[in-house]
Amino acid sequence: MKKLKGLFLLVVATFSLFLLAACGNSQASGNGEKTVKIGVTDSDHRTLDAVAKKVKKEGINIKIVEFSDYNQPNTALQQGEIDLNAFQTVTFQNDWNKKHHSNIVSIGSTVIAPMSLFSKKVTSVDQIKEGSKIAVPNDATNEGRALQLLESAGLIKLDNSKIPNLKDITENKLDLKISALDAAQTAKSLDEMTAAVVNSGVANDAKLNRKKAIYQEKVTAKSKPYVNIISANKKDKNNKTYKKIVKAYHSKDIAKEIKKDYNGYELPAWNYKILQ
Image (tube, rainbow, N blue to C red; front, side, top):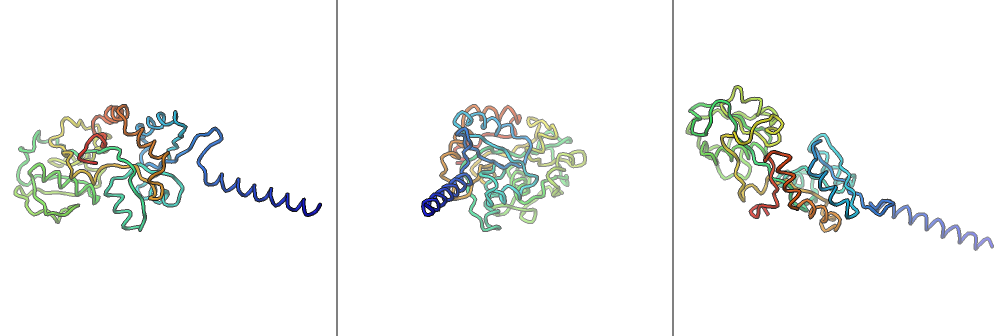
């Protein structure tokens, strides 16, 4: 009798441990829904909210987790605190992986956000005179993009660096005074600068009219490093649930939502074959 009782207790204990392990590794809720935690760095996540409504019908519950800076979402992803993140560009992710020896991969594109050259003093690039002051963002990725924009506009020439900086300017015929400022300050600098290259998000927040920009970054194959992406740990790159989220994101109604919500400052990257 004691042996039978002991065996029964062992079976119960083993089954309990199995249940605990299963619960710890599963994202399924009691009603059969699968909860997927997605990290972001912006409180404005209207597009992701729209995607969440679409996948809800497929039994997927997206939980958005906000972070205060660009370092946290990848750390949280690596540590398993979130399942995916949607905040970074291809370049940022590649740089992160190199510096942190991590295996974070893209499972799908989201948007491309072209930068623009704004001015309160001139109405076209041709009006920019010798010695004019130009502001660009000072973080490595956006500074490189801004300088490439100025080169595309015919104002400077650069060497062949993948991500150029001010030292990579090889020709500056107008002797432009180019200053690197905090990205958030570029729009504010327009009162004193001849022109400024402004990130799309900063421009949108500053209520700058995209149609009045004197030059805009062109979407070409060179734009691929600046595409925003949904990222996962490499081991999860073929996760079927995550693929359903990407598929829902890459839909016509979400593309319309992006254009409407962000006044054309953000564009659905998956619609550009040159970026794929």
